[in-house]
Amino acid sequence: MTFSDLPLDLSEQIQFSLRRLYDSHGYRRYRMNKFEEYDLYARNKDFLISDHVLTFTDSDGKLMALKPDVTLSIVKNSPDAPGVRKLYYNENVYRVTKDASGFREILQLGLECLGQVDECCVCEVVYLAAKSLDAIAPDWILDLSHVGLIRELAQGLGFPKEKEDALFALISARNRHELLALCREAGLSDASAFLLTDTALTRGEPARVIEKLEKTLGAMDALTELKELTQALDAWGVGENLRIDFSVAEDIHYYNGLVFKGFVRDLPKPVLTGGQYDKLMKKMNRASRAIGFAVYTDQLERLEQALPEFDVDTVLVYDPSTPLAQLRAAADSIGGAVLLQPSVPQGIRCRRILKLRSGEVSDL
Amino acid sequence: MKTMLNVALPKGRLGEKVYAMFEKAGYECPSIYENSRKLIFENEERFVRYFWVKPSDVAIYVERGVADIGVAGKDILLEYRPEVYELLDLDIGKCRMAVAAKNGFRDDPRKKLRVATKFSRIAGDYYRRMGRDIDIIHLNGSIEIAPILGLSDVIVDIVETGTTLKENDLSVMETIVPISARLIANKSGYKFKGGQIDALVERLALQTEERK
Image (cartoon, rainbow over the protein chains, first blue to last red):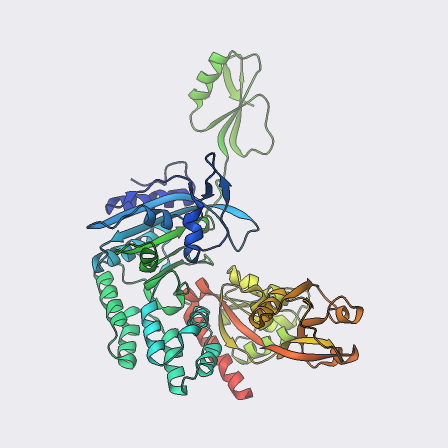
């Protein structure tokens, strides 16, 4: 079954396709209340995209917030337990975005996997991210990165931890000239500065990049992890559009380990972003691990979609004296989408205009 | 598959210098010299389309993907922080972001420093790093006049040769950051046209190296 024959716009069709995709892999839809106690966000500001939260005082005097994020609530309601919780959500959140002045309501569609997350879970989540992109547009790229790899390399070369934010910011801007300058300023030798910069800016097909990095860096856990993951994804049939690109790992306070971002041709911003967020689990006193991703549904609106030629098939202009009983029957007899109007409306694009007079339908 | 590369160039002297670099790199578009009123020019043989936009808007065109690449001053990138890749320092349009004041000005650390600027974010970040409490007065132009009329104690602005400052009895107190023109790229566009963009960057980088 496809959703293309239903009266849905492209963005809605994609959202239903994604929900069906997640359902078919055993992920259960997680429905939640719009409100959450503000305290949750105050304690975990580091894990929010924006510090701004819409608050109000509930009838019992408690300070509440309209959810700016879904993941925090899911983690809060996921106690450590054997096995893995596999969930997805399709919820509105309220936050201040860079592009808009003031708060906006954003429909967020995402998927989370929490608990005893192993290689299989990680592979499945990235696989579903790839399949999601495939459902969004035919021409897509899923960039994979590993925060641990860059961090381990930087620390091994003696790059100071307190400058890590600046390092990752420059990597995310693929700013080679300032990266080299930062490495030198941090006391790295020329050879180390070039090794760190060149590694951080390497990008391309996973097998090629990993082979190259194995030669220059030798054995590293993160590299082995990336290698096994990308080989598995290849076997799962989604390897072709995967790329390694360390510039996608910018949010290092939220994500550890694997980070990924999805892009589709002609959309200027990523449509999907995700990764492992064990740090948040730890902060919320969970021993278990987590990985997930979110799809930016607001970006989907920007996908190329032809405007329908007509707003309605037929406008049926009725005589005011027509008995109501006759009106329904006449409209139903026409077929297609029929708009009833007492006079010819302005600004409606329709295939034809018919009139109903004395129970008879005829051309206007 | 090669597709058209959309390039946003800053209108004015800097943009002309930048275009000359692109032309030398093999991305010429002769029609650009034909009509000064037209804003969009393309050369299908070279798979390139140029458009002239206001210098401070280049980053917007690139961030929103209308342009795959563009050239913007580091001042604009620091002030507006667009989500773009900064692929190359073109080493032209060189100047610096500096703090300037009236000759003979002495900072009184007991008072909040009044700073007039077009670059509120750069100024704010700079003084935050120094731990100095300031009052930012955002102006849109003629910044030099602010300390002369007593509107501010200092200004934070772009200084190229320093002639304007000198003529107004002002001088540079500190340099905040050196500025030059940078080649920027849309992050998503780079995923799909990375090969084409990298080839261009390589050729432009050769020119900047030669100049050094």
